[in-house]
Amino acid sequence: MAKDSSFDVVSDVDMQEVDNAYQQAVRELSQRYDLKGSGAKLEFSRKDGSFLITAPSEFVAGQVVDVLGSKLVKRGIDLKALKMDKAQPAAGMSVRQTGRMIQGIDAELSKRISKDIRDMKIKVKPTIEGDKLRVSSASKDALQSVIAMLREKDYGQPLQFTNYR
Picture 1: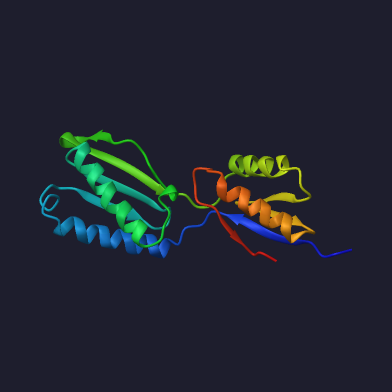
Picture 2 (picture 1 turned 90 degrees about the vertical axis):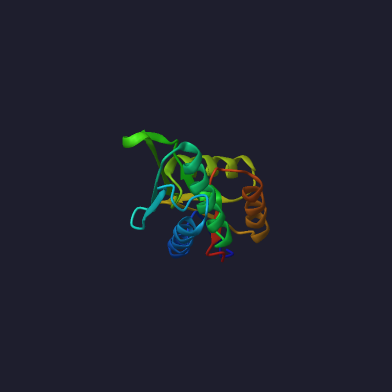
């Protein structure tokens, strides 16, 4: 019997690059003429990958999100991994907006991806393993076609394909 080949479908974000993008965004917020004295603040918690934006208005909060997004893109981080909530009113007529970086594939999305793979009706076996999905098959061509199908579909977060053997 031939040895099965496999690969893992994961959704990981390099938190060091996110931290670097955050540092650059904070630096730009302190230097940009239209945001310099506005009182807009950007905070980042590395351990849970969350952002907190405090701004005097929703417009300024949107500008802070744009600055952060541009820095993330320059650092090679897909913006699908950043989920921003709606701006909420805060004390002193300001607004607060939170966001987080998506790490890993949750169970619901894993099931949806697994079902899409099974619907292709080719000889591959998707297995859910925690926050990743392992796809194995005897045919490397079948694995390549699964990767191509997953790249075409949009699952709302970036997917990477690792441990291809």
